[in-house]
Image (tube, rainbow, N blue to C red; front, top):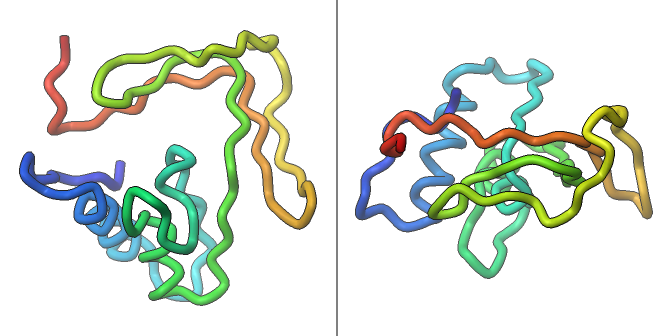
Length: 121
């Protein structure tokens, strides 16, 4: 878990910066580290919402690559519990591949992340 405690009044960018700090603190420079997060958190440059975790990591660790997740079935959190609209075979294979120069992770079944500061139902 790398999210740590995020203030309720923080912006989206501040939350992602906190996630990046957690990853950087837990991995030494030069170490190969895989951080798995939702697609809005992994871009290595700013997006419409602000500065994502991936961009913060790329500032500190040159060579960081974004991996987009192609989600199948399952659930996720975005202000409330939600489910993916697509219903692919949840028994399918997890697969990392390259498409048009981008890394893609096929994830047949996703589960909602556990975030310590978020109240549980």
